[in-house]
Image (cartoon, rainbow, N blue to C red; front, top):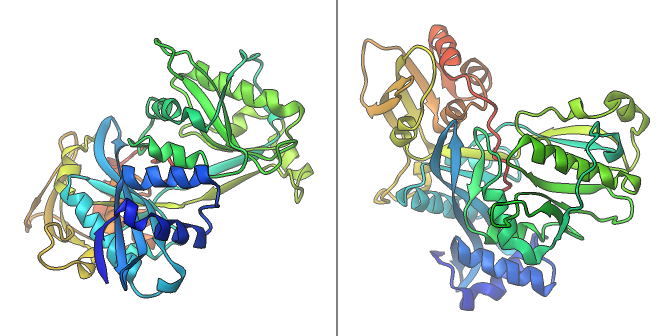
Length: 411
């Protein structure tokens, strides 16, 4: 087994085969071309077995917003293993190798989408917040605005769509993946994809838009992969566009935007859930935590952490399981160790131990969740790898009081 960089001319046919084996690629040429661009836009590493790639990991550069700060971030946007190479430790070892590479290149945190909770925990990843997906009849939206006629968007518009995504309104935990090829590939994730939007920017840029896909063009459901807007007025106009589809489309499925409760904007949402129960067009709210994240540089992350309230200091004994998958001479080998932590307006972490301070023991998985605000310290002490004095846990819950983090970008 050998880890090496992806060679497009040499590896593309083998990688396409693996992508088809896991159901992520058809034989449509436009999808193949999009995949080729995606693989070469990011940092793609393959595990070679008997001279042929059988596993690969694609990482994409980006940023993650921590309150008002933009932190360097890397998304592991594809971890793929062929049918013949399963259960051999390839994916875990190669993923650890890529995380180490991204950390050495300056990523302060890494994130990924998980196929199941538990697998990536062995590499220090902790589960993120729930995403809420609301399915409803668009005709039931309580929006009185009559929208302007939107512009059609297709996959040919991928570069301007990507620019609109980067400029969208973003809250705590929101991610941007900077390579436009991310958006191109996502636009092929689903049947009959199309977009609707408005070129209202100062120089004609795409200011706000939605991107949809559906298996049933005539009546839906329509899946809205993303909504991008910068202002309340743009958000309302996009809702009005969605409502305008309600004469023909019986159901849309939308990711609930951060800070917004879509139920506020629907007529009789509870009645419609009961009336449509068990039908193809069932109105429902579905929640799932599909993404995970880990801190890669604790000291740098805390330098960018500015919290309100009284300053809190404590010792942190941090465990990081990723080291068991890396060679000892790897430039970055995880962040396990003893630290003195300060949380407050000016937070910091430095190696050491202060005998006068209380001590928190945690895995990097759980501490990453705490730092990002996924769950409070007391809750994590109930369900994850955090142990500390009750008074310290209570103080942590007072100091780390954050909005639910929402990446708002699938990876």
